[in-house]
Amino acid sequence: NAGVTQTPKFQVLKTGQSMTLQCAQDMNHEYMSWYRQDPGMGLRLIHYSVGAGITDQGEVPNGYNVSRSTTEDFPLRLLSAAPSQTSVYFCASSFQGSGEQYFGPGTRLTVT
Amino acid sequence: DQQVKQNSPSLSVQEGRISILNCDYTNSMFDYFLWYKKYPAEGPTFLISISSIKDKNEDGRFTVFLNKSAKHLSLHIVPSQPGDSAVYFCAATSGGSNYKLTFGKGTLLTVNP
Image (cartoon, rainbow over all chains, first blue to last red; front, side, top):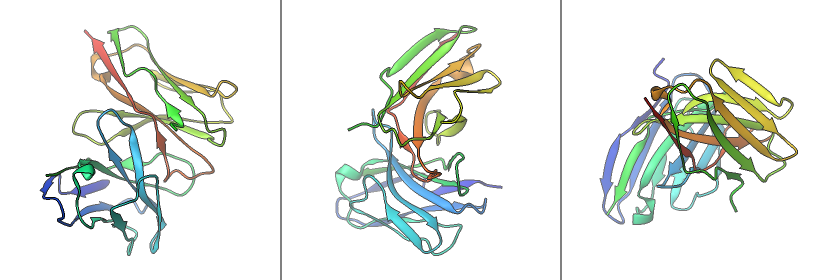
């Protein structure tokens, strides 16, 4: 199993550009989530999904969109990038119920 | 308002000694707690967890203690090894919502040879 994969690893955007961060998992997990990590901060939840076709907002959803058309994929879209979205983005997945989330390696995004 | 707090940004210990990382929480609805370890340029990896029905959980060199009345948990690493040097995050969730983890800011542990 590849686990949770994220692409790209690094990305530089100009203010106002849009892009999609890709996330895929091959563990047949029902749940998937996106977090961002900023310096000196813990991870903060952006959006999450409890199954295909079901998404909801987390703590810091503004400026981001998600969709979940398949169990495996959970892309995160930046509609109009802003410097405040410079961060490291982590995707995670888990089975339904208590238990750990498995994290991808992250995407480091810089918005200039 | 931070619901999960790790008040020590860093901790330095000697190899072979005990490392104790602390975490406090304010939300009494939290019923499941996890510790993650993170190396630079990698994603967090799960280390150990504890349910609120327990007060201790052990896995090899790692033990997590939970004091519900004090809303406090701690991670003990014995003996500490240089490879344990990483950032450790405490996380919490409730009601089986393990897709919605609330994280602390992390503690950088350095184990000196």
